Amino acid sequence: MRITPKEIGETLAMISEQNLDIRTITLGLSIRDCAHQDIEVCAQRIYDRLTSAAANLVSTADQIAREYGVPIVNKRISVTPIAEVCAAATAYAEDFVSVAHALDKAADAVGVDFVGGYGALVQKGISAADAKLIASIPQALATTTRVCSSVNVGSTRAGINMDALLSMAETILTTARLTASADGIGCAKLVVFANAVEDNPFMAGAFHGGGEADAVINVGVSGPGVVRAVLADMPQDADLTALAEKIKATTFKITRVGELVAREASRRMGVEMGILDLSLAPTPAIGDSVAEILEAIGVGKCGGPGTTAALALLNDAVKKGGVMASSAVGGLSGAFIPVSEDASMIASVEQGALSLEKLEAMTSVCSVGLDMIAIPGDSDVETIFGIIADEMAIGVINNKTTAVRLIPAIGKRVGERLEFGGLLGAAPVMAVNRNAGSVFAHRGGRFPAPLSSLRN
Image (cartoon, rainbow, N blue to C red; front, side, top):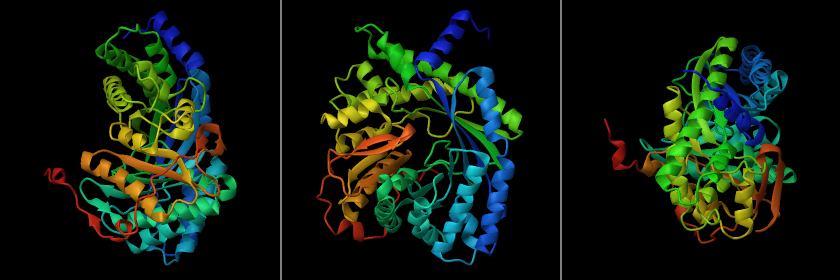
C-alpha cells in the first residue's frame, strides 16, 4: 500500500500536536526456570535472567524512537507470576520480599520504568505460595520503586474467590498505610483483577502468562488526543454512525504506527513479537484525555447522562479499528478511564459531575475498571471489599476483564488531593458509600461461576 504525503503529514501532526505515542514496549519473560528451594538463590537467578534478557531493551527502544520519530514513553518488563516461581521455595512471607528487591534492582540496572508480575492467580483457590505472596505485597511495594503487583481473584470460568478478595482489600489498606508519606504510591502499583489477560503490556497489571513463549515483545500504543482532535473537527450535525466510522479510521492509523514499532523491536531484540495493545490511555497533558473524547461525542460533561453510552461507542470503535489494522491485537485494547491520569476526568470529579457509582457503570463497557481512584483514608476494609466485589462481578458476569486500583488516602478527606506526578498525575479523593455493612465481606467462600461459563 502506497503512503501518500497527506498521510505522512497526518501522522506527523498526530505526534507533534496530538500526543500520539507508543506508551510502552514491554518485554515479557518466562522465569519459571529460576525456581529454587532457596529463596535467595531464586532471587539471584531472577536478577540474572532479567539483566541478561533485557540488557538492550532501553537502547533498542530509544534507537527506534529516534529513527522513526515516534515517542516511546515507557520501557517495561513483565514476568511469570512470582507466586508460581517461588512455590518450590522453603520460605516465609517476609522472605518473598527479597524477590521483589531483586526485580527492582534488575529493573534499575537495565533502565526500565517498571517490572510487573509480582502477583498470583487465585481465582479458584489460594495455594501456600499464593498466600505468602499476598501477605508480602505491602512490604514489597513499600520498599521498591519499580515493582508492580497484580492478583487475579475472579474469572468467568471459576467465579470469584471471596476469601482472596478480602485478603486483597486488607492488603490495599496495609499498603496505603505503609506508603502514606508518599501519598499511598504503593497502591498505585497494585491491581486486583477479574479475567486478567496474559499478554497485557500496561502497568500495573502486566504479567507474563503461562501460555506465552519464553520471551516476547508486547507493545502498547495510545492516542486519545488524536481521536479527540478528529472528533472536534466533525460537524455538529454528524450522526453517531459517522463518528464511529471516524474513530475506527483514526485508530486504524494509530495501530499501524504501533505495528511498525512492535515488529522493529521484535526483530532487533531477536525475540518473538507478541501483541499490539491499542488502548486509549490518557495522560495529565492537556488534550490527551478520554473524558474530552466523550464530551466531543456530545456529552455535556464526563459523568453526565449519556456518558456510559458514549464510552461504549468509543470502546467498540477503537477495538474494530485496531483489529482491522493488525492481526496481532491483544492485551486489553480499548479505552481506559484512570481518574488521576486524565486532567478532564479530575475536573469532572471536582465539579461533582463524576461519582464513583457512575465510574462503576462506565466500567461495564470499557476496557478495564475502577482505575487510580483515591478514596478517604478512613474507609474500612468492608467498604473496600464491596467496591472490589462489585467490579469483579461486572467482569465475571459479562466475560470481560475488569480491575480495581484503589488508593486509600491516609489522613485525607473527600475533596483533597494525592499528588503523584508524571503519568500517574493527581487523584482527587472521592466520596464512597459507607453502607457496606459488616457481614457480606466476611462470609467467605466462592461466588459461583455464571451459567455462561459452561461453553465447552
